[in-house]
Amino acid sequence: MSRWLSLLLLVSAHAYAAPPTEPERMPAERQLVAQFNDVRHSVAGRTSELISTAMGFIGVPYRRGGNSAETGFDCSGFVRAIFDQAKGLALPRRAAEQAAATEVIDKKDLQPGDLVFFNTMRRAFSHVGIYLGDGKFIHAPRSGAQVRVEDMSASYWQRRFNGARRVAQDDVGSPFAATSTQ
Image (cartoon, rainbow, N blue to C red):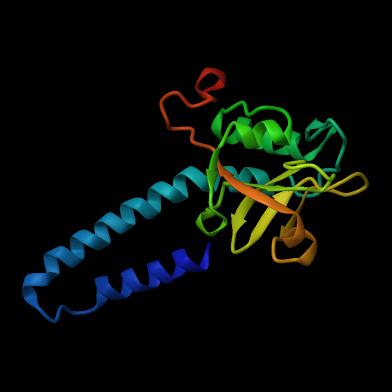
């Protein structure tokens, strides 16, 4: 869970449990806490299945062109398989195509389940992973390695960071609407 979300939970729990100082403010505080809890459950529901599915593949070997746990994954095959299995969405096959088909977001706006892209082959968007929160992401790194979690603050990943994207699966006209398998 991200530090931001943890802090909000702590503040909202304190606000909910603390005795009101002004009786007329209590209904507004309760309404705010109720709204926050609704948002928290909604976000958690959308991302928890995706993240838990991805984490279930830790240790699967890398295989260039691979797109299944049985044969191994490359980076974009891993991301594509996770979104298909957890969300029923068929993302494009290559990392650059996934970047082009998803919504650009600022790095500071990353949320668990967003895509993170890196320039690892002297070309933009040549590597992709799934953001987990707290500066961590999961990916299929390279030949001879396995699906694993890494820290984006490591100098290797900082130097190669290309951008962040969000899969806008709920949007009408989404590039994935026609390829949804749900």
